[in-house]
Image (tube, rainbow, N blue to C red; front, side):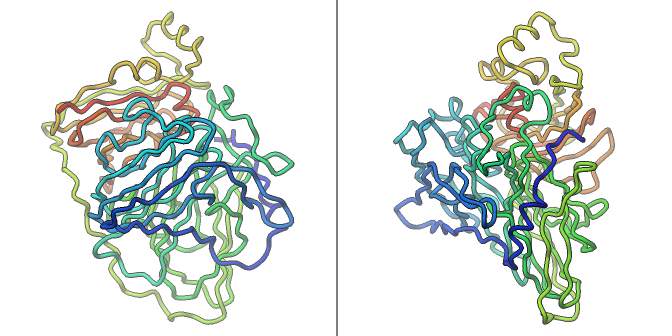
Amino acid sequence: MTHATPLSRRSLLKAGAAFAAAPILAPLAAAAQTSAPLTLRAGKSSTALRPAPYGLTDVWSYNGSTPGPEIRVKQGERVRIMASNALDEPTTIHWHGIRTPNAMDGVGGLTQAPIEKGGEFLYEFDALDAGTFWYHPHQRSFEQVGRGLYGPLIVEEADPVQVDREVTWMLDDWRMTNEGQLDDSFGSRHDAAHGGRIGNTVTINGEIPDRIAVQSGERIRLRLINAANARIFGLQFGGLSPVVIAMDGQPVTPHTPPDEVVVLGPAMRVDLILDMSGKAGDTTIVSDIFYEELEYELVKLAYGPTALRDAAPDWPMTLTPNPLSEPDIAAATRHQIVFNGGMMGQMMMGADRGAMMEQIRQGSMWFINGKAAMDHLAAPLLSLPLGSSHIFEMENSTGWPHPIHFHGHSFRVIARNGRPTPHQEWQDTVMMAPEERVEIAFVADNPGDWMFHCHILEHQAAGMMGFVRVEV
């Protein structure tokens, strides 16, 4: 992967070297028992993506903030959100990773009519699972998300792990012009056929922080959310040993990731425990090393002059599992799913070439089992009986990675390239490397039509999208 646009962070960071705490997300606590819903208003605004002396950047945002407000509820509470559209085009809100009723999933043209300019739509659902989730449009997502429409949704556990501090980082990259505005090349065919829209400026919670203050001996729960259209992050914590305690909101056996690098594809979330093991006055550099020869410094962790404690606390790290249906692997029905298309990959193995060329002429570049979104939205990719167990044997026959997201369900990642995964982790978005085979298992226990797509948003828009029907 050497096709990313080089970052221009270094020159920007020189202009913004003020010592700062982490950018704080605006809270919007959702009290479950109140009658009036919270309001999320999608509209145009401006924000300081780059530090002074640079000016403001025009973005699209919720309630005028980038990211949108951090919504926090407790597990089991009712979430009621009134979506208000002040954009000049239709929009929706999708609650990524949350197991909602189908009518609340926020997919324009599939689960609801898009919210027109000046319109409203009430989203209402119970927060069944605790964890780190997020919200964003599922209507022309490649531009609406790319211009800044997204925010975090945190569902708090009844019995959370003990930490000194909890922090949420929404990671994003922006393709900016020399004038400090967003490049208008949304929907580029080149981006769609390759790795998607990779930006040249990376932010944490809508800002470029130089330093984040920490204390020696401090234990932090870091909730990471990748809100980028296409960028994959591979975070290295400068000698710290991050412990993964949840993936895509679902608890996992606490473990240190391979090579101590935390990889997040677009839409993925990871909860970490970080024990600040440096000494007072030290600085630890957090780097993104995913793209070879395009590594860069994300942010510095700067230790204050006094230690909180002499050593890491001996507190449990294991989270309580969420109430997910366990798939019956022995009785599960198996389905073969092949992703193909794009540049540098096998376009349409075994498919009718004439049909392929017609789809390409109509703008499709990516395919699931030989068909693009225009066909998959006319009929389901699969129809599954309610309550049945299934295994998707997925093959990435392309030259690009794909984060594959399944709406309305969480699934166990049970094998990669024929080998069982060590943690059998629950996820809703799984990263597939080029030419990789991944098996996922789940129970089709949420009735309705559910999107199944690549979350590199340019790939989704160019055909790598369909839906799975769970029959009542």
